[in-house]
Length: 384
Length: 125
Ligand SMILES: Cc1ncc(COP(=O)(O)O)c(C=O)c1O
Image (cartoon, rainbow over all chains, first blue to last red):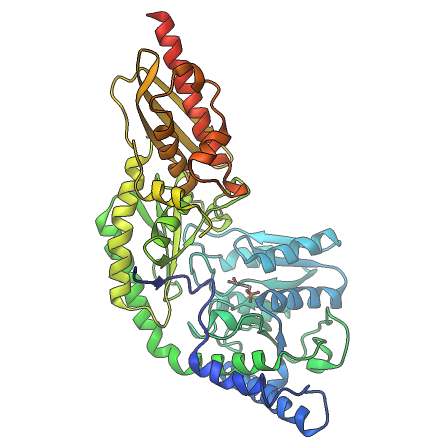
């Protein structure tokens, strides 16, 4: 049997044992509906309240500024559509490398009469705050810039952007799905009014997430029903999920400071090992302003999926930058926006490390990738 | 696993990989939507393929289909190869998921082109 090495933590993470432990009672004896007034309901409500306090504690905000949702995707939708609905019309600013949950939400709003600007990024995947400044208009109603990109890990200058939006009183949404619990997030210092985060990227369960909404931010709910979440998000709460998210955020708050340098060292070991062993490979994303565990590389003259398959056969899970869907290969829109030539972008592979990753894992990946890429290149016809 | 055991075996241990010097026929198949490219070389004796080699850029299935396809055609008369279909290559790799059928198309196109090239060269000499 092969060794198994999971290097796809930006896609999802295993639930932390302490998170699972915290959740289990809420599937069992504490099953009540938190809206019910009896003891069964109150026990479930306690779990939700405690989770909200834990999240608020880590974010250093007030608990009633935290809304639970069904995922990072819903948090992004709620933030953007919620502000848009409150304003009725206007202009949105975002970037070309946002997650689809943001990009397609903005595109959908464009079909409903809103205007949107998609800011470019530089070769490292960085948004220039001066571009944000230049894009601001009198009718700009929201700026939405992700904290770090999931594919390449570049960390955006959100504090500088937050200064611009704050000066003008424009709400600032930050998709922090890839950063909360990995790098410091400070909504006050960064001038953030809306912050999306998600459970399954930080060793919490899937299908649960949160949105921080600064008090006073004008927005409407986008899902109508009961009075849940102070009428900002209708629907009976996912109590075990919320409890798990609360615990996951709390654990990240505890472990992040020690883990970030460890993962940064491992990610650098991976890149240095691979970069030194073969020609025509490049590291994507910002050299230093990057998520600790993210290492996205392009292997020229090889197709991403053949590397992913070859590594899968070695028990290694990584993800391909280019996706071949129904026979059509799309090089990653993020790499294309960064200006990476298509013949490089076609061979991109993302390794994302996590709390269980060891130096032995990294060395095994290096030992596996190097001969695999050499073999795939030897099969390849020269392209001119 | 999404792919057949045969496909995985060909991907792990590709047969007939590499270029051929002074071939009797060469052909390419391409799938621009995917940037896949397969090049097939043939050595022919008495109208039959005695050796076939390939060079391929593409996803795992395309590489595997190149290996299985070149293996399949050794011993075949050139005349039958000009009509080789994608379905024949697909069955040689033990089937393909619907969104990877292009792998068989790229390889069958390369083999047909190589067979036509060999026939053309024979007619000339
Ligand atoms: C930056 C970013 N935003 C949003 C999401 C969506 O989160 P979820 O999977 O919880 O819907 C992801 C997940 O891939 C992400 O990486």
